[in-house]
Length: 213
Image (cartoon, rainbow, N blue to C red; front, top):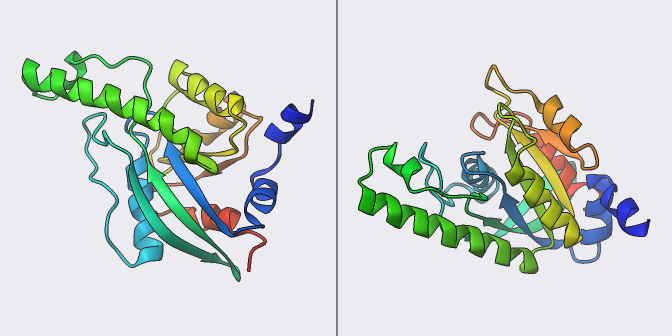
């Protein structure tokens, strides 16, 4: 009962309990391929570190194939602050088929190499869960949220008792429906954003930095 209650804590309460003692945390950005993890990581670094990028963005799945860490991201919001180490992780997947890369024009040799690297990236992302204080789980709000990947990722995090906030991304697109994500995973808090356009990121920053100052 205590574990279930803990999983249902609001994100603001989680920030209070988890970070108030140290005001510094290592946060992982997780989610399916092309959900916008790297776009969000780049946006956070741009907003709070004066520029630079964490990684490149591509329409090809699994563009990020190794975890990338950005240290010392100091977020200030409403007089409160928190210093983050952000880890942008490879896209999570339950199956990676080299043929999906061939659909983007790669030959078979290159596609198989990319699939191998992507598989290794998923394994690395899972290992990083042992070294994180919390997770931002990025989902594409235009897609059906109740997928095997999302259910597996959330189940893994809950089993580890690792606090998470769901980030419903791509609300700038006409077919986006954050409410579907909330309905699929009501036990977790959610913030709706457009990482590409920077919409509603202040809400995300305020949630992270709440009650610190």
